[in-house]
Image (tube, rainbow, N blue to C red; front, side, top):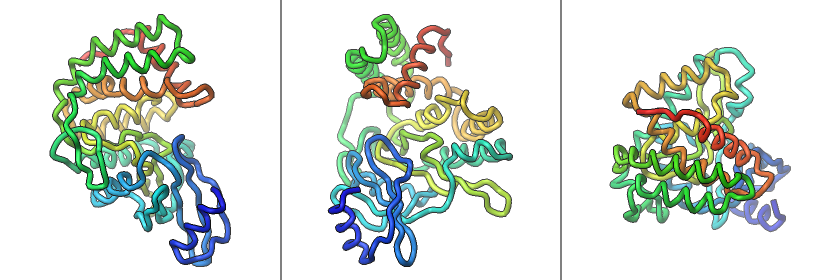
Length: 293
């Protein structure tokens, strides 16, 4: 955090900052914990548009646990501090079936927020301009990303991935018009959990910068994308809890929706850990029999 950022934040909250520590955060922003004489706050610096993210968090907060936005600055948000541990740290503790059920239920509730149409938010009023359907966007988006992913994927894999995306894209016509809130970055690092009276609870869903209006199956697919690295009991319980709110074909359609995220991830610069994992998954998916609805 730059000294000028710290001065502005201190002036905004009307309190001196006694210490600053960096928290784990996304790749497009910096997240810091600020100690104050009378408590703590969290500051998010950067991201595509803090005003849009703050507006999304405001509508989501009535449905799922979300930190309150205390102050909004041109390039930052000041958030309430929510006690808890990242879901990744909880994976070493007992009670994974219970935790999977809790996370699945909470992720499913994100989609209880609805909008007039699907698409990306244009401003802090959460207006959504018309856009082509997801089923027609996927092949074009995959082609653009594969053209930029030569540093991470070999030509044969890029060609095979584009073919796979093009083949399965028409299936998205089934959910093209769904206008539900989608977090779009649901994974263990963006979920805080805690134990209360011996019971696992989600304390907060973090990092809403990529949220949009669409189909919630993408969130479940995002959560289970690297599920082989999580406790099996957790993943099974998550799938069961999420699936209880949605039709039986959510896993297949979520798998197709996740092609957007995987295609985009592999365009990141070298040294990006999650992008490297995405490249491995793309290679795996192009060499195995794909799922079917």
